[in-house]
Length: 199
Image 1: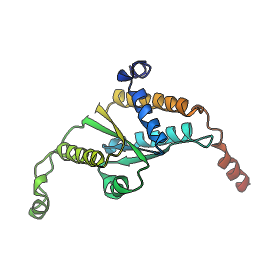
Image 2 (image 1 turned 180 degrees about the horizontal axis):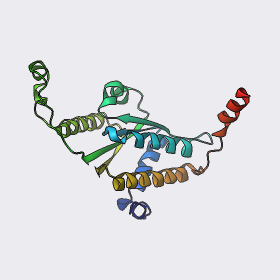
Image 3 (image 1 turned 60 degrees about the vertical axis):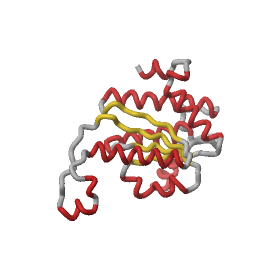
Image 4 (image 1 turned 90 degrees about the vertical axis):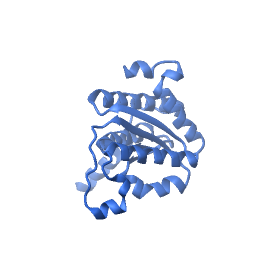
């Protein structure tokens, strides 16, 4: 299903073409880093997969995109200062999930309720949704470039479709960058050097 969408010649119906175009335009504006900002901890391994796909497929011939992976809300505490007011050289793909299976935040004790009273008895989804929207709003206020991907839920079909979308996007980017996405000619260099040193 995703391949059919990603090979549609109508850009309005082709998510891979839309995303690849946005990333490539950012590269042309000297924005060489691409941050996949995942707003669900269960997607962290998807982020690591994206990092390898991007680095191995597009990093060659003096060209490339430096892939970053961030997890919301964890990395907001450690990285958001840089993302919002550091060098404006990062393009972001926000990835969020509509339905995560929600739980309510319990009252821990009266001291906690006094510090953050607005959280009492709220759902985790509603808090994360507010954090996500607040992050996007900050990006918009600072005119930072991003695209947004919303998954319906975390399932085999949704994850598979997302991975397929990113693979086609990578092939399109390679075409725009005039490189071969399907080889990694330099990956063996460090392995050869390691084997020589071990011997």
